[in-house]
Length: 263
Image 1 (spheres, one colour):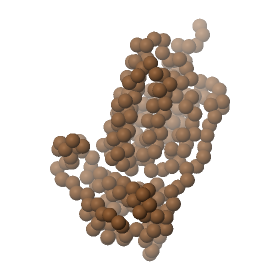
Image 2 (image 1 turned 90 degrees about the vertical axis):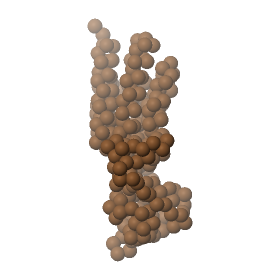
Image 3 (image 1 turned 60 degrees about the vertical axis):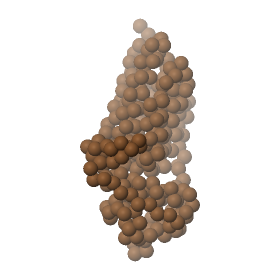
Image 4 (image 1 turned 30 degrees about the vertical axis):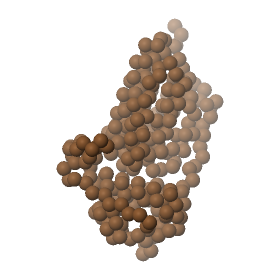
C-alpha cells in the first residue's frame, strides 16, 4: 500500500469533532469505531485506484501491524468490505479486490400506484427495507457520511413554503441512508420507488401554513433521531427510529385519507 494509517483511541472515550472529550458512555464503542475507520480507509484506497480489481491485500497480520488494531477489528472491517462486494477471500490464497458492484435495476412507475391503499401497502414494504438499511448504515457508514446525514436531517424542512424542496430533501435523506449501508441492492431498490410514494407529494396534507410548519418540524425531529443513531453506531436505535418514522408516516397518511373522505 502507498500510505499507512494508525488508529488509536483512549479507552475512556473519544474526541468529538471540536476536540472535546466524550465519555465512553455516549461515545461510539471502540471496536466498532476502529473497524469503521479501517473499512473506510481501505474503501477510500479502492475508490482512489490505489487498490485495483485483482490486487491482493496484505495479510491479516500485516494489516494488524499497519493499522495498530486488533485481529477482531481487522476481521470486522474485512467482513464489511466482503458484504459490500468489494473484496473476496480465497482460502489459502488471500484477500483480493473486486470490481465495483453494479447496482441492479428496478423501477416502479408512479402510474402503477393507483390507489391510496396501494400507497399504504408500499409504506409497509419501506418499513421492512429501510429499517434494515438503517441498521446496516449504523454498522458500516463512514464518519463523513454520518456527519453529512445528520447535517441533511437538521436542514430538512427549513423552508416550509417550498413543498417540492422538502419532498426532494426527504427522498435524498432516505437514499443517503441506503447509500451508507454498504449494499448496492438497498439503494437500487429504494431509488426504484417513485417520489410519489412520499405521501405529501400525492395528497394535500396541509390546510394552512401553520399545519405545514408543524408537520415538517415533526419530520425533522424524526430524521435527526435516525441520523443521530447512525452517527453513534447504534444499529438497534437506528432501526427502531426508522421503523417509528415510517409507521408514523403511514398513520399520518391514514388520517389525511380519512379527512379527505366524502361525507
